[in-house]
Length: 329
Image (tube, rainbow, N blue to C red; front, side, top):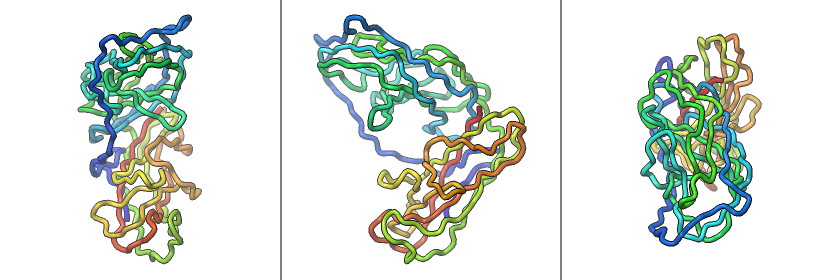
């Protein structure tokens, strides 16, 4: 079986910490005789991000949890050239400069208990642009036109009603060329406590035969379960939810959670599907389309299925767990 656990009156399922392996890039090159400058006719630009006006964060949300990811927006293209060896990255305008000079380094937002990361949408996948100094520019031309977005991350205690003000929050700098791009929030973000209550969820998977698998990528019959949203107030227009596995394997499909370390079964994971049997991507927001602005009680119908991830399967206990969080608009 797998479990979704939440403390009373909370909409986050909190169980264990997730440890993600990250490849860190740190250079020790100097900046002597290095420079960046805009090409003729180009200048610093601004990317305008329109975030959600309100984000709900349960009090027991663990530090390091991504609580919001914005949509991507693109600034006017601007080209510049670096002679080589320049520091590069994000300069924080709303808090202390981060000392974590890696791509995944988080820039703190004052004393709010929140931090942010700047995201760039590349041709292959989204990547973080770390705090200034995380890497160095080579000698070549660059174009700042990639779609950009940002994440909010919980990094400490958060009090009810904390706000992230509208306006410029950070600049992208290359050497002494600052800004190359300025990130601007078009409206403030208010952080609130959860407004719907959610009980713990346990999905009993029962005893199933490994002979039902037919190879990697096949699954056993799914087991339905529901996440209940109780006592939701009126006035909320959109509810988004995300499920984040507490045990993960980068080789698994995005809808499959790895088994817990205590599980004895091998070669399987747990796939989450919606009520139409479509795999549900984990770790991203999904709109709950059946929510009503009138409020009340609701249920999110989902399914779980054992999914073959390895070339061979060994029977045994097969459990996992996921965190469940919600945002309101």
